[in-house]
Image (cartoon, rainbow, N blue to C red; front, side, top):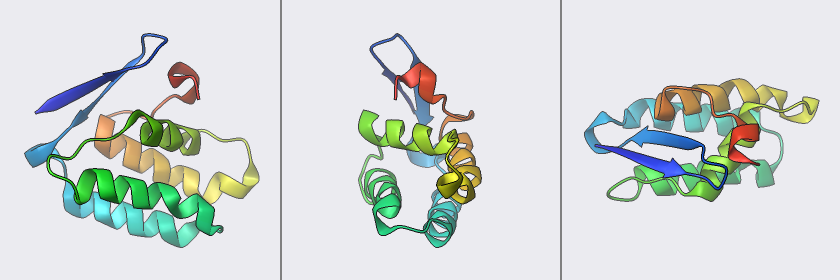
Length: 106
């Protein structure tokens, strides 16, 4: 099952849900991400992704969480560089691409 999200600027991203979601790999990436980010507030995205995609049936990602992930996928702030690579891997796993924050308007 595939679900699409369309944002105000017309950008659409889709996520494969249910049986297509590699829950084990997502869990591993979320644990890795939590281990590399420095501040507790920055770990909130792992809590959101875990709740929305691993703890909820059917799994679904909110536009806010998707936007937060997109911000992590492309950042110029050195404080966030360690998490950027893992965020890109999470995005690739979920969407088959790296989310583009400028297209999402975040």
